[in-house]
Image (cartoon, rainbow, N blue to C red; front, side, top):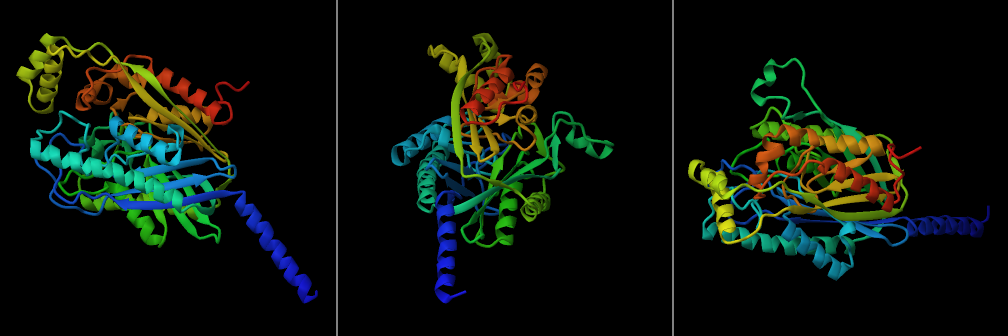
Length: 456
């Protein structure tokens, strides 16, 4: 072969490769430290009596920006937070619409639901006995956080470069269904009772040279190993640290699943939080080491907010009794709601609930607002296959989203947690069917195959 012909062949190979990359994915990754710089009340446990007094590790928000071969864009945002409240989420997404042209369908804001992160503005109104100085710290932090998230997404899109995406599910088993297994009796149980979903969804992003760029992964389990006064991302934070240490230069993003009724058990020690973090990271690494599904550079997104109905609120007499006889957040909740009723403020009768469906190549991804219980993940997978990814705690965390079974049974996830979130009453029966019907509708809009229940 002559030298000229050899050089021509080399140039042709590079041209083909360059053209292929130009028609493929582009991905950009960014991260920002969101650790509060002064003591702040921590979200999640009503039993806490004072603000934080340090940290186990930093808190982070991270963004994975994507662009497909047709220029369609979307962004996944992970965060070491309990949950984005509606008002904050709406403002962030509105600003991203104005500055980047992103619709709600193209933005996924997920929170790990760590119970060792900060309280945010306009959330958990009645849980904590906050004075004006404490509320001022929360407000200032929240306003700065909004700006950080907007800049984070902007930075991720600014860093777009050719990439390839892969997906696969792994597995790990430290989640325990907390409704059907009593924490104090686990040692006496011969077996654990479900339902559960042990899947570990993983998205791998590599750059044009094949170097690992980002790992987006998830699990369905409350980050409630720890109840300390030190800030941390709990087991999810430790898992991200483990993966980033194992893969230098890579950004690891954790996305919470349908964890509403799933706890890490046993718990309550830092070594256990580290152990679960290592277990989750090991599950992710096993997936990375095995063949994964390559995702074609095709991105479709769909989003809607559906009106979930709330049952009638309590009477003035019922509120008065609770305010007089109860203590703590129940007393504060009843006192606030009673004051609002006496001022003529009507009860909230329905709530705009966010649901989202994405198609990344052949990978279905569904996200839901609120504290989604595990039955929703199982029902989605019955319809769209076991490889479907299901995230909860997305775009707005307004309360628990129980299954019909849990709603009927009541208890914390089905009833009393509504007061924790400041809502006046439980959801009305029928919400599960309403949500799943909307999922099927959005899946069709996103170009996903018809669910098994509809396929003839």
